[in-house]
Image (cartoon, rainbow, N blue to C red; front, side, top):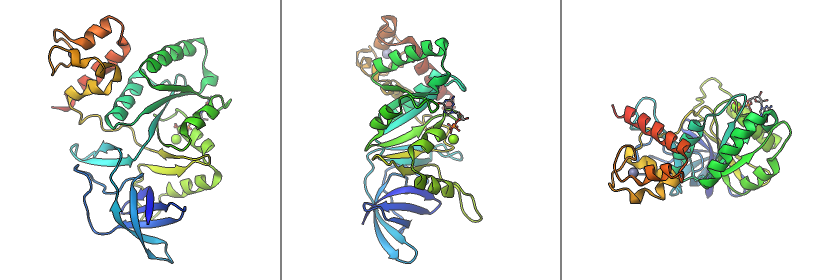
Length: 308
Ligand SMILES: Nc1nc2c(ncn2[C@@H]2O[C@H](COP(=O)(O)OP(=O)(O)O)[C@@H](O)[C@H]2O)c(=O)[nH]1
Ligand SMILES: [Mg+2]
Ligand SMILES: [Zn+2]
């Protein structure tokens, strides 16, 4: 029976069948699916075959995990070489940002975009709390809007106070699996509470309950949207694994750099001081935004630090 994993709590996984039936599932034996060292074999978003076990308890065994279209991971705090897969089969990442109370830095947005690019997931940048913006914030918004749409990212603006932009946002999310991401205070919970019907919210409260003997190793959780589609919430995840990226890979995850880097004189060009660098030339000619190049440089430096 085909099912999708909605939640993982230790060795148990909540799976929902195509007809909407929910099972508590476990792995049948141990099997390896990806060629990566992962601390968790089953992830939220995985499509699996399940075999119902005990009708009274709604339990089932997972027979098979289908190949993942994509996944996001974070490195394990104990061992940087080990990965914890947060979620899989994602259609798009929604990066929630704010320009006031609190202000999201451009650097943070770019790091999110790079991580999503590395995992082959398209991104939408959503600026929340527009009700708080004054001239100063609108100037920043216009600048960022131009920069990111020029780089072919979708940019939206919403307010959870005035409900500006929410219909358009729902249209973008309809029938898709959207991963929610943003630093705390941006209004992620407010937006999710608005999108989900009451029934889904109740499961949300239950799943966050940390009782005796229950491990709250829930790093991601999927919910059905009433208008079609699903969202994946990532509570408590501060950053996706960007730190195991090779320095030479980084520019490939900036679409505007990816478009020109084949013209660099050296094929191992890091686009810093090398002669004949097509990326730096594009920055000088203002074909690549200097601010994006700056983010590139800052991330590059942070990768170098991780090497030692
Ligand atoms: N003015 C204003 N406040 C908002 C908006 N959205 C959320 N907030 C407030 O921002 C604070 C943080 O929201 P929350 O949803 O908890 O953020 P989270 O940390 O991302 O989950 C709360 O006090 C919300 O009421 C908005 O559009 N406008
Ligand atoms: Mg929250
Ligand atoms: Zn170069």
